[in-house]
Amino acid sequence: MQTRSAGFPVRVVSVRNPDLVCEDYSLNVVAHGNDRFDLNEDTGLDGAEMLGRLNEKLRYRADKLVYVHAGRDLFYEDFLRMIDTIYRPDQTIGVVTERVEEQYRTGEGCLVASAAR
Image (cartoon, rainbow, N blue to C red):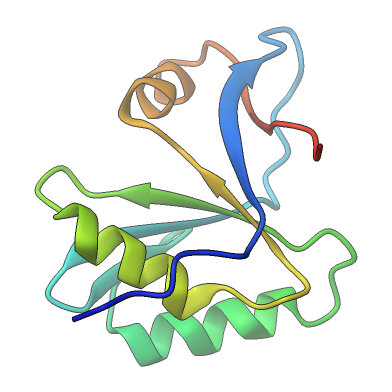
């Protein structure tokens, strides 16, 4: 299957500011393959459920940043397909690498998306 994966803003995510309290309103989508996703604390959602809940959460937000994570065994093509599925023209995608994920989970700081160029 071919994916679009071009022409939309993607930001590199890092972990910064270990002294700050991380904001708990960020939107994190994790793709696990086989049409299974997590959206924040909601786990095991199928694609339609995840997209519906994500769109509802984005509806009234000024900052439409969505952090995307890949499950350990996810193929790259499936990761790109997830980005294609969730992206809307008014939002920004923040790609969370495995290293950044580990830093965040161990409390080294908060997720921060790079600035637009």
